[in-house]
Length: 375
Ligand SMILES: Cc1ncc(COP(=O)(O)O)c(C=O)c1O
Figure: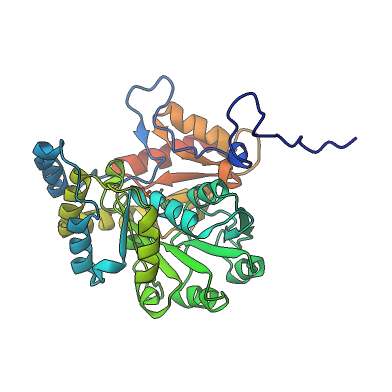
């Protein structure tokens, strides 16, 4: 007798059967948006922009009302031109997606065959793995030290079946980052056939001179991709706009499997307007920089561990002591109308991730945590 799972014959199964591996995928769990018994809770669970979105983007979105019956132009050329000009990037090397999430899916689908693998950090963002598993690829998690990507550990997991290596920099859910020279050391250890994906969803929130967003690496090498999003700094998470900068040959390959009209007209118009609204970007950044430091200091002052963050959220570690745990803190904060993100699904059951809010929100979080710890 063996206790191995029975091999299912898909041809004779009693109902349509997903291909192997699909049902083993844990569904992505988004940050909660409701708190039981609280009418208007504050959502600090999804790293959205607490200032909302740019007034110019809102106006552009509303201005698209007469175009709802039309298909968008297929290649997001409007947005392509705007991104190319704003960042000085060659338009033919750009790819657009329904959020950067779609771009990770497309990269996985383009490069992975069953039995291949991807490598990511221990606490890597969940979307990479879901797409890879859907391609029947293996997901390898490299141990992180102090919640930070460890290049040597990543390289240890790379083998001849590795097709993609994903690094979010800064990372979610940890908020940590690694320097440009570390990224380059990782790249130098990869065969030229392995794609290094640098996910810059939070890149704008970090201004350290040691940081490299990856754009120059895309120009230097044929196996580097930089992805970005309008969901965070630009506050357009609801419209789902992400983009990537990659070698032209790779863009031409990935573009073949992209859905034809994947970025809709109102989203493109709003994104172009957001790109031009530097005043909104500056306000959003200033808010994050000011209150990230304050929250780190205040929450640290309560005796909790705050992981140093370079993004628009902080990751807070709680003791395992009954009455003081992360799970109990999450429930307590929810009762006070503050929804934060439990990150047990990322292997961090003793942590909570908290999006940086407005001054009154941040003060409410610290007051609530202080009361919680007093019991
Ligand atoms: C690290 C990271 N990458 C990518 C994304 C996805 O962004 P998008 O909204 O562009 O799909 C997120 C969203 O939370 C993220 O945290």
